[in-house]
Image (cartoon, helix red, strand yellow):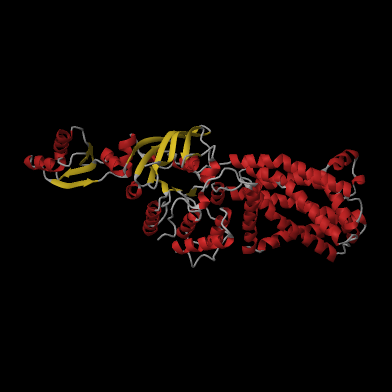
Amino acid sequence: MTAIAQPASLPETIPQGRVGPLDAIRHTLTLAWRSLVQIRHNPMELTDLSLQPLMFVVLFAYVFGGAIAGSPKAYLQFGLAGIICQNALFLTMNTGMALNTDITKGVFDRFRSLPIARSAPLAGRIVADVVRQVWSMAILIAVGLLLGFRIQTDLVGVLGAVALLVVFTLGFSWLPVLVAMLVDEPEKVMMLGFVVVFPLTFISSAFVPVETMPGWLQAWAAVNPTSLLVDAVRGLLVGGEVAAPALGALAWAAAIGAAFAPLALRAFRRRS
Amino acid sequence: MDNTIEAHGLVKRFGDTTALGGVDLAARTGTVLAVLGPNGAGKTTAVRILATLLQPDEGRARVAGYDVVAQAQQVRRLIALTGQYAAVDESLTGAENLLLIGRLLGLPRGAARRRGAELLDRFGLADAGGRAAKTYSGGMRRRLDLAASLVGRPRVLYLDEPTTGLDPRARNDLWGVIRELTAGGVTVLLTTQYMEEADQLADDVVVVDRGRVAAVGTPDQLKTQVGRQVLRVSPVRAADVPVVARVVTDLSGAAPEVAAGAVSAQVGDPRLPPAMLQRLTDAQVAVAELSLRKPSLDEVFFALTGHHPTDQASDEPDDDRSAA
């Protein structure tokens, strides 16, 4: 009968004020573990994660590829990097949708009443989604290779591309996460996907050479952070300039994270 | 005895709705404080403030001496909350849910597993521990939820309508757990709509109504305060109803309610019913039905607040999940 009752002065109940950064990382990783265990219990989720990118590769290569580049194979060599980037940005919308669903459930009340870092429930999901991102990129590259895509760099280039995308999405995710904290249903996070991710990816160097666009679109494509990301990923996969666009993309990711993470945390705190 | 929970003048508004209009609460260490009130009375809002999930617009509250706003993180180290809705991750197994909480509380993996197994066992979930919580019955989910609250051996436990929707046996089990916890020094604040639950468990009761405290006291004090019994008499002949009414008025000093051939009145004096029967016998009035019963929660409420709990808007934000 002493299993649940206890003297009130166990060491772990001695109150301390702030959560240290190491503890915050531990809390984040623990909550990321939670999100990954969900995949283990529902492996179909990975199938879902693979279908949309697969469809995009096939669609772009075989429907538009011939018209844009002369052949599907030739187009993949240019367009696969763009498809990978667009897919990565779309996946960040899933992060937001999942969190929006989560905060309406009681389990998030429990997390909020625990002595853990305030950012951990949000950051935990973002970190866990790195695994979903990498899985999805691996599928895209594998399918690309099957359809005739050729890596013209080396393994380091491929890993570099994956790492760059992971870091970029870690920063970019805070935008959909902020929206997820503000809206009342997950579908509205997806709306953000259409309103933000489509112009960001289609009007960039992702799918067609920027030079083919009218001047005013070129101007947007030139300042669009997605163009920097796509150029760097393309450079890392098939050769070309890497350092400048990669640094630019990372700077954007840092800026987006720095701007939206505090807003998202504040909105999370206020959301009762 | 010290108060582990103390709240003064809590005010919380949601838009135009005032969920709490200045509420004081105090729970003595190692006792059960029941917050009794109908839906929409502000019970859940008060608990969420005390659990650091909501900030009050006015007033202040302390748990074990720590301010729930300024020292929220310290408060969170001492408390656990089990709500009306099971706060468990449905896609995780029971064991994983408890492991998750243990790890978040800083227990090493092995210790967290052992603590989880101990609690699953204690709550009769040992066999179900490896199954996803979404396959659990409602009662099992609630038990898992309570187990999750106890992983960190909280000193203060908030139970928000813990027995709503439970069958009588599950309810009795839960009451047993609460008694066990307070015996171990835990302070329990529980909200309920049931007078009986407050009666069974609470050392002190706070009756809240429309965001305000309507009465405070031990269950006995409240019962004496409002504990008049309800007397109902119907004579065999309908023509005798005015006679019965006159006798009851004479004896109780107040006009009774007369409806459908029956006279009913609240009586505080236990000598009244026999005296009334004597008078009716003398007047040769034959009685077809006579009953004396304890007041229902509705009547206790009426006595305390002057209106019926069912008058309340039940869609106030504090008890409504979608706004929470």
